Image 1 (cartoon, rainbow, N blue to C red):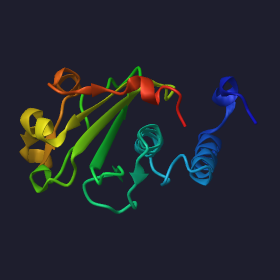
Image 2 (cartoon, one colour):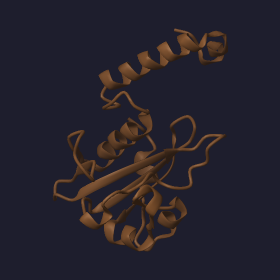
Image 3 (spheres, rainbow, N blue to C red):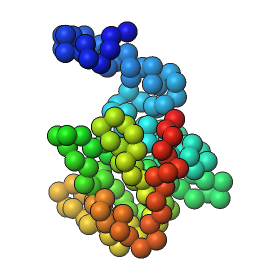
Image 4 (tube, helix red, strand yellow):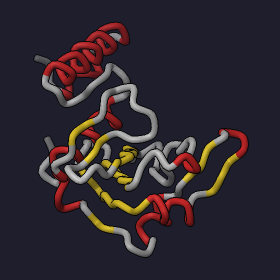
Length: 162
């Protein structure tokens, strides 16, 4: 196995092949559920484990996990890098349909360590989210979540990782 410091010596094709291998191994270990960008899948598994949630089927609309009381959790994640600072969550579609009860946001550092994680109620999301017509969805700024009334910081619960 090549060390990270030797990656610069690999060709683009070799790097992409390595990425595919890593993606496959993360799926095999149950860390990720798809071959897409691992940020969302990793966050979903991490939150589910830390909060004792059951992950929903991959094609479930509007929520990612449920708790033993039947509450539905929508889990959003961002990975902050040198070139891309995490400031907002991905679009929340169909907010008015009340698909979820709790929104969880996880912000990772570039190395996938948890920088910050918080959860808020859907009612709070409805108060702080802004509808953006061009994406036909609601957008939540992370700073608004951190400062929202009733926000519950769960960073320490997620710190150990999967």
